Amino acid sequence: MVGHRRGAYVGLFVFAFFALVHPVLAEHEADHRYTVKGYVRDAAGKPKGAVAVVAEHKSGGKKSATTDKRGYYEIRFHLHDANKGDEVTVTAEGEVKKVSVDLILEDHVTERIGRVDFGAPGGPDWSGIAWAGGALLAVGGGYYWQRRRKQTLREEKREARRAGQKKRR
Image (cartoon, rainbow, N blue to C red; front, side):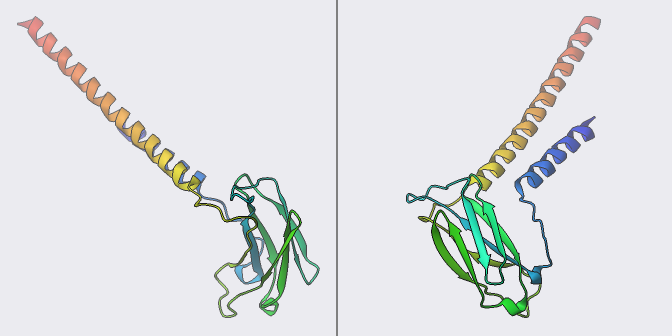
């Protein structure tokens, strides 16, 4: 019985861990993938969700994404080593920015990323830490509650045995 409860806590921890990790969906091998990502914020630095972001490469590749509630977006291109130095034009709400494809030719393992942010800089994103802290509190609270409950049951059994022994005398 105890093993099943421990397994439940381990299962809850594993679930919480994977629920907090963003899945990485690769469309191409790392040496053929170039990701443009960033945030769209207003003048006060607050995230803007549901904003269309369009990125265009000179080869005619044009892709778009919509920001999430944190103002975050990602757009992936299929580019090669020969595209080093090319410009990618990124547009959000009429504002246009350019990023140069910067990559290390010998490195075919590390993901190739260009960062383009729009609007005022935002503060640190504490949401991941808050979720992790909440999950740890929930697991810790559940563990504490379980231990406390077991201790109470043991005390009740002990009292029942003492009461039974007193009746026999």
